[in-house]
Structure formats: structure tokens, C-alpha cells
Length: 328
Image 1 (cartoon, rainbow, N blue to C red):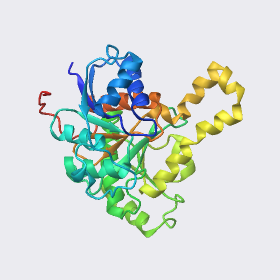
Image 2 (cartoon, rainbow, N blue to C red):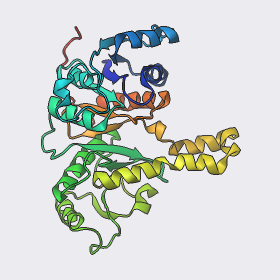
Image 3 (tube, rainbow, N blue to C red):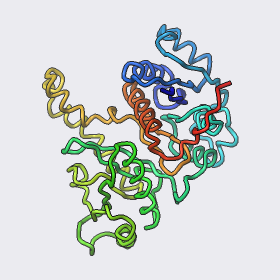
């Protein structure tokens, strides 16, 4: 059983190396499959955190990749992957290009991550644009994949069709689900509703996919009738963040009952976005996952689990690591 090799950007996110290293430790407890972590960031900071946690033995197989460059919030995003090659978020992607890792995880800036992945790893064959894809829970206790959830705010009809192709491949492999039901997000199920772009995409999807099930409205996304919901990144990001707020609403409504009742807490766990970890960037020649900037250690641990499954099942389809090179 080959160990999965992961590059993890520990300088990303709101909480930095302490939380992300803690997430790696939690991931060791969650996963039976062996994995090696390339911890990308400032070596001295990482070493200090590992020493503080007394975690050297508990981290399992790992290697620290010292990253000297720092990307500031005011830096221009265009071409930054060329100028800041030693930044942790860029170094993770470069390790994939060098075939030293099978997947990378970052909670950093989405635009930087997408730009680095696109220009360093390249676009998958047939993919018009990369897209972020997120699993959401449903009442049927099976997830639904929503894409795009933020990478592309403006889309043409052919882009939506491309998202459907990428989503179909990902769900089929990641969930071992042949012919997943594909739907197109709109404001109604009638053909006369929605924009011209939605109408054109509907026509193309009907011709391309026998498993296309028509339009779906926002209130039916979590009903479990669809396996893949296609939309532009503007609508998808709004819907995703609305769904992420359900857990906080449930905590507020249930109050002490949520805190003190184990049965209630377990049932509500399905709404907690931290249980879903990171989202994959599809349309890239490599398994690249974007974690939320506010990710806790549990969210990072679940992100690592998602990455391991994606690599094991070749869910992205072009991992870029089929011919492994040994680590130096």
C-alpha cells in the first residue's frame, strides 16, 4: 500500500502553523492509510510549533520544506507565482510539478492558489476553466457536489457544460457512483425561466449527458434528488456560504440542548462545514484542495482525509504523480 504524499501549506489561513500542524496530528488518528506530509512554511516557525506540541514522533512521516518568501495582502496577484516562488502556497504546487507529492492543500488566497495551479500544473484536457467543487449534505444522507463555488464569477454556457463534465468524472470516482444525476441551478424548473446562458447550457447538457435531470431550484439542492448541481461561481459561492451558516443557526436555536445532548449533537454534525474539509480545484492536472481560511484543526484533518481519498481513487483523473520521483 503506497503512502500518499501531501504538501500542506502551513502559512495559510487565519490561524497559521499552530492550527494546521494540529490538524495534521488529528489526521493521523483519522486515517489508516499511510501518508507523508511535506510541511511547507517557515522552518523556524514550524520547528517551534512541533517542539511546543512535543509532536515530532506523533507527526509520523514528514519533511519540512523551508519557504522564504511571504505574500502580503497588498501584493499584486497577477504573476505572483513567478515572483514569489519560495512562498509556501507556491511551493506546494511546485512539489506536485516535480512529482514529489500526489496532492497539495492550502487555506490561502483562492486566486493565488488557482493561478499557481493553472500555470504550474496546467489545465486538464477538455477543461475550459478550473472550477472549485464542494460537497453539501442532503436529507437523503448522501452528498451533492456543487460547482463552481467561487473560481468563476462570469460564465458562458460552454463553461457550465465543462463544469458538468469535470463534476461527473469527480463524483463517479470519488463516490464510486456511475452516472450521477446532473442538474443545472436556475430560478425555476420551467424552460422559460432563467437567463439566456442558462437556457443555452440546458440545451447543451441535454445533448451531452443521458444522466442530465434538468433544472433545479435553490430550495431543492439539499433534497438529495441530484448528485451534481452546476452553476456559475457567483451563485455557487452565495449558496455554499448560506449552507455553511446552517450549523451556526442550529447552534443558536438549540442552545444548551445542542451542547449537552450527545444524540442531538451527532445528528447536527452533518451541517457542520468543518466535517467536509477542503474543496478540490477541478480542471487542473493535479489534486489541489482549497481549505477555508478560517479552518480549524478538525477542518484541516478532514481536508487531509479528502486529499487521501481523492488520490487513492484518482478522482481528479490527472494527478501528475503517476510516475513518482523519490524525495531528495
